[in-house]
Image 1 (cartoon, rainbow, N blue to C red):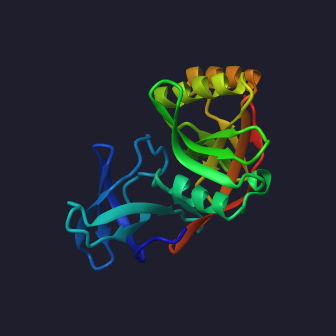
Image 2: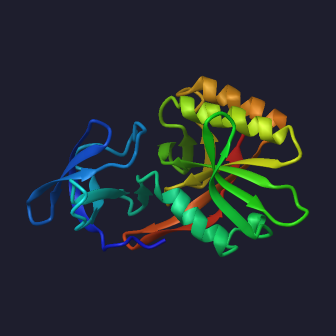
Amino acid sequence: MRFQTPLVPAVLIRRYKRFLADARLMDGTEATAHCANPGSMMGLAEPGTRIWLEPNDDPKKKLKFGWRLVEHETGHFTGVDTSVPNRALKNALQGSAIPALAQYRTIRPEVKYGTNSRIDFHLSDGDMPDLWLEVKSVTLSRSPGTAEFPDSVTARGLKHLHELAEVARGPDRAMMLYLVQRTDARTVSLATDIDPAYAQGFRLARTAGVEVMALGCDITPKGITIAAALPFSDP
């Protein structure tokens, strides 16, 4: 998935009100960018961090920049836009680029299920059990090489686990897919200390038959694409 317009580098001044960030562009001017991330962004929003913004000229948008990437001192990147995983994953699913899911030919996003919820993707193909696929963006890393989810308490995420468990108890498959938007991640685990309730819900979902997959991403200022599977450590 390529970014619609070329990204421009900047330095983060501050993130505030969850969805806003002030940044200094390379020419010294300051700009306010939309931050499409409701999480805590732990370790990613320190003032002085080098970031990448996507400009836009849409007259309907109040803000002319969107915050897309963090560039770490190591040269690695983290994608901070939580809307990106679904778009990148849709491209990969339609192109049969994920071997474990390539047998499914019909991919429908945002299908109603559970209690006033919509599954990220519903996959089907002939006589195989349908697959209900929920996607979570992973950006937290507190230990080198290990990505963790979540970075804050997520009641919505817990609700999704309960609803996937109900699906898994029936004839269909249910899967939680953790898409890691960090190029420095080698393994994935749950941040059980940050949200113990989510960790407990995850264990119950696994017992009910919910499957788990973790995928990495290739990230550059040009775009984000789905990469190889990463090992996931059950809590």
